[in-house]
Length: 101
Figure 1 (cartoon, helix red, strand yellow):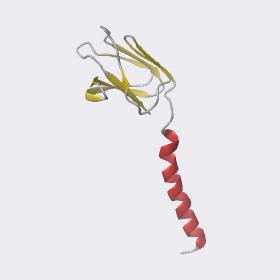
Figure 2 (cartoon, rainbow, N blue to C red):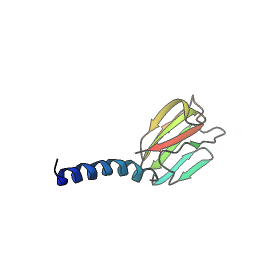
Figure 3 (cartoon, rainbow, N blue to C red):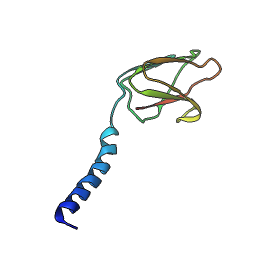
Figure 4 (cartoon, one colour):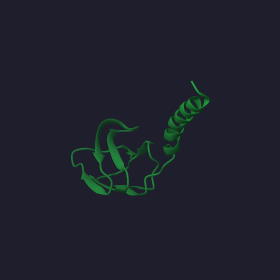
């Protein structure tokens, strides 16, 4: 194998390793609201707690999909609320959320 081929393979492999790490700290731009919980520019891929005494409406004003969960720690049943949209969950109390692109 030539030196050029080895360099190309090495550079390609390095690119694959760097790409996931570069998106790890990305924030969802915008505001997410559920009851008393308001998150502005929430971290992507991080589980966040939700607090609401009676609200059933999720307002996902971010540029990422919000996955809302019935359990704490992003466990239990879940639903996805697309970017820049509303979700209504009258029969479910939501306890956690994470954002993904």
